[in-house]
Image 1 (cartoon, rainbow, N blue to C red):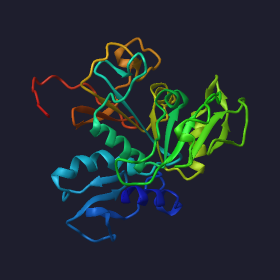
Image 2: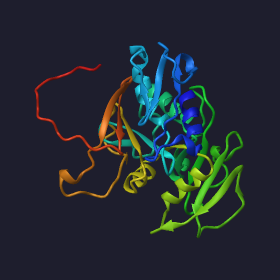
Image 3: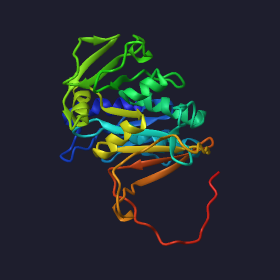
Image 4: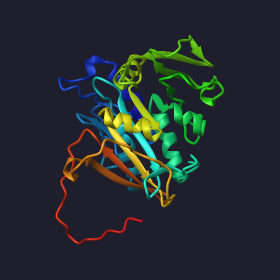
Amino acid sequence: MAAAAVARAATVDPEAHDSSGFWRAAVQIGAGGARVPPGRTDAHAWLASGADGWSVAPSAPAATRALLDLYAPVCAPAAGRPLTIAHLGQSLDGYIATASGDSYYVTGPDNVVHLHRLRALCDAVIVGARTIERDDPLLTVRHVEGENPLRVIIDPRRRLGTHARVFADDAETLLIYGDDAPCNASHGAADVVALPLRGGRLDLEALLAELGARGCRAVFVEGGGATVSSFVAADLLDRLQIAIAPLVTGSGRPGLTLPARDRIAECLRPAHRVFTMGGDVLFDCDLRASGRALALASGELNRVV
């Protein structure tokens, strides 16, 4: 949380960027979130800033290194628009819910805590209208420390009623709809903003620009599958996380749905890291890094759990 706060402060300060847009603030975050003064060597400085964002210091305890490795990229500032990360939890056969829409819960409790950490680290959390209709989520931070993000609901046709829990006054909420939909000044306790449509779909670049203008430096696209897919297709994600649970549904609501490719060579193969969360396996994909070429088979096996 301290690293995220420092990154937000640096992002709004034009003096804190070099010509390439990277942050150069000389700040370290130590044990317990304490800030370490610039230039000071401290054995407990676990995160250090650099040209590419946060890096994990060699002094970090092995038990916490995985946690720091996973969340440090979320705390890095982005140039031009908010840093945008998305997450989907799915079964072994690729579904985020059963055919009836039941998704409570596809992934285990460790991954649920992870979702709340992402909410706490980001300034805004985005979901589509279909997720509100089916799941009626709160989108607040409850399982970890941290403040609630701005809840952003994408509803191009403005078909949602005001009874959904996100339209209560327990956290700030923004309803985004198409500029050709009916216009009212508010929606329950939520503010409303009309944005342009492109081909019948909401202009997601305009959405990120709107959130950036509101001071959002990190945005979490939490779901559902269609909303995350639209961000991937528009090339507007910096990171994509997919948690795979040891579960087989047989059928249901798919996770990512993207335009088909004829050849494997044309498919997205992002640079990635793999983390375990209880019984789930999380793929953390960096969509801004070059994909890794397939390595020659070595025959080596590694058991990680």
